[in-house]
Image 1 (cartoon, helix red, strand yellow):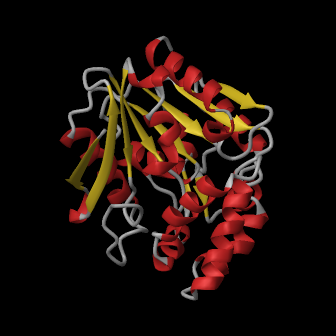
Image 2 (cartoon, rainbow, N blue to C red):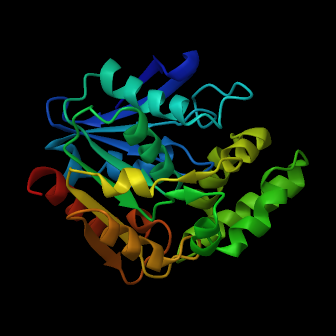
Length: 273
């Protein structure tokens, strides 16, 4: 595996982990709210994927090993420029973008501001595509919004408890001790002010999504307790030609709950889709 540090929108330094075949079809993974590139560890080290594919997972601004300056998290253009910086700096030719949860919003930002960059396809995984709107209030669980005061608290114990509860909502089965504390750790690397700013946006991307002209796979856990599964069904219906894949026994992170199926479907989507 290789680590890259590149310059994103507005000069923010961005970390990207690369694995797999450097000459393979490029796949760029974009993680969710308060997560990191480590969210995708079950994909970066998967034999099914790293033979034919070039696998890259970025730390979003404010997350993981990327820069965390204040006041740079509500401008959609900056989020879009971050993705474009990864694609252009690392020479990704027609990549497939895979966005989980909040990563769906980042992909929509990218599509809005860089509509002409050629993509091979997009996989939305339990994606948020609206925020701060009445639709978002219906699609995103009230349990998530109930955690916001704790997630944005500067009191360590309060923040740890809220992040632990968020992790509990994300997975259908409780994580074992080691992956739980690893996940808790990289969530807590994200400063509370960043977690607050991430939610201080009003976004409705139906116009962008309705104009998509690339293959789209929407992956959804049937037992998702963060995003209403119906939201993904409706999303797939709005996007021309999109395919919906529902995982019966998975929650908000089907690539963790069922990595075998996820990696198999991703490989097929990239190579044969």
